[in-house]
Image (cartoon, rainbow, N blue to C red; front, top):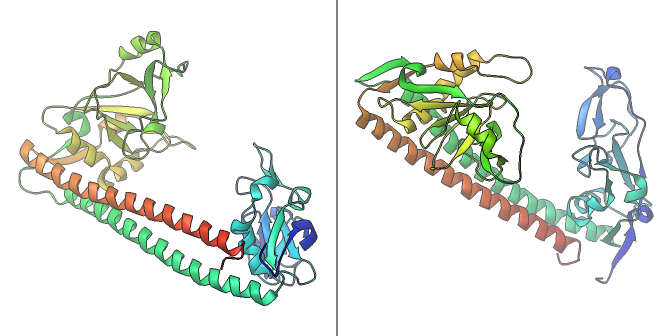
Amino acid sequence: MKEGWQTKTLGEACEMYQPKTISGKDLVEDGAYLVYGANGVIGRYNKFNHEEPQLLITCRGATCGSVNISAPRSWVTGNAMVVRPKNGSLEMRYLEYLFRGGIDISKAITGAAQPQITRTNLEPLEISYPESLAEQQRIVGLLDEAFEGLATAKANAEKNLQNARALFESHLQSVFTQRGPGWVEKHLKEVCEKITDGTHQTPKYFDEGIVFLSSRNVTSGTIDWDRIKYIDTKQHLEMHKRVAPRRNDILLAKNGTTGVAAIVDRDTTFDIYVSLALLRALPVMRPRFLLHFINSPVAKVQFNKRLKGVGVPNLHLEEIREVRLAFPADLQAQDRVVDELDELREETQRLARLYERKHAALEALIQSLLHQAFTGQL
């Protein structure tokens, strides 16, 4: 331990408690004071139970262990744990950073179905900090400055990605609305030899066998061949009587995350669930042109107008068949559009991969900074 530093348990260094909870029906829309629940502000109230800002730890639910700082004069409910330094020995902002990276909060979380944190589990956790408040303030200042720069870098990377995606979406929109000479307009049923869906029966799954896909495998615009389920040969043979997917078929999610499509990009045997529609293009239509149309804003507007059902939205096959699209009658013209869109999509995906790498690197840098801060290396 670095000279001038000390190690104590949270119970020794801090007072911890869960305040009185108020019912949601007691919240007042134009109340004078903010109310804090498990994940920050949940409403307003005409009373407050804390005069000063408090450090709050989410103590129930999936976000257990996350940190908030309340505003002055606010009401904190029992879904958050107030953690207050004793005897002025700890700066609250230093303690906040400790909870963000200097404490293994997972040791205090119990319950898989409904995670929770109790004071009993928090109290034994050890923390290290400088005895000098001035040194704590110095470390907080360094972390604030570093985190501000990191936040700016993350925001810039995310903005670049959003701009690239917006450019691609805008180009898709223009392609399918600003038709050139030689373009025609038809219903999907007129350019597809088959528009159907998968089995309506929930299959029995096995550890291995024939690949079975559902809409969960087509949520990102590409087919996820990793998180797959398997069925046996008997079920497969029965399902293939209804539909036998093949390369260049389009799979369209029609339940849940609707209107997202992917193209079958390999020669493999598999079956599909009712949550997926299968579209097989006629010779007048390039499959990848059809794919880009289905993923375009023009198609999404039509899909959204045709959604049926309350709760989980659903696209019926007859509605899909009636969707209209414009396309060049000349196949070579379709190829040129596809090449252009593929190139732009690849650039968007390249930026997405770059953003993910930057994001991971920045997160690693954040953890490194926090480790240095709480081991006396800053």
